[in-house]
Image (cartoon, rainbow, N blue to C red; front, top):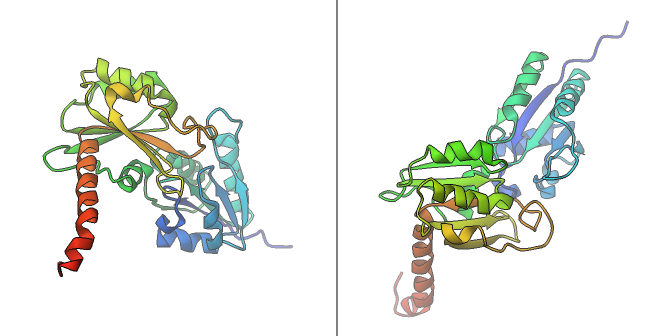
Amino acid sequence: MAEPPKLGRVTLVGAGPGDPDLLTIRGARRLGEADLVLYDALSSDAMRVYSPRARWFFVGKRACRQSIGQDVLNRLMIKEARRGHFVVRLKCGDPFVFGRGGEELWALAEAGIPCEVVPGVSSSVAGPALAGIPVTHRGVASAFAVVAGHHQAVYRPLLAALPTEGMTIVVLMGLAQRAAIATTLQDCGWNANTPAAIVIGAATAAAWRWTGTLGELGAAEVPNRGSEGSGTGAPGLLVIGQVVAVAGEIERLRNSRDDAAPVERHRGGR
């Protein structure tokens, strides 16, 4: 009688903010070992170079579009692992930051499937960083909060509980709700002149950034080249707090040094 296939395994890999160079070394190694890659909508196609022999199957979720249900995806991972396959679940950002990684890990544990988690660079910090915005800065912001901007009933109580000083707010998946989010923050005591930013596709060649104030955020126009709330189809986020002004000052200083750099080099400066 034929022996049953050896039990496979699953690895949840954080793909980072989209640039394949920002994938971790361990994540790239796991892709190279995979038989099947179940990938998200915002995972870069360029990452396929790390896993040329694997089958790739799209399981991503996009706003206002039909997509595979979470229960169906869980069953698919379990079925493939029980067939002896090594499955990589390639998730945007970090698996445990609004990525349903906990749900998937739970389902795999219940089914007795070995599972590893490879953390990824979360877009909640990578997006602002790539746009030159520090989420914390000594003397300006000693903490930051990351919220999902899908539904007001969920984010409003969270925003209402946060201090209005010394704090940075990062909103993922909130571009379409930016007006409501701006209104909510002002209702909660945030000054309308608080610096704010929109960052779209920060890890891509089509990166785009808007800066202004919280009072202007709701009416800010974004590129209109698709869907996903941003109009571009690219991932986007909001940043609210004085750190946006810090980024502006840093950019001003860098630009002034760039203008002076040729003169400094001519004078023998370093």
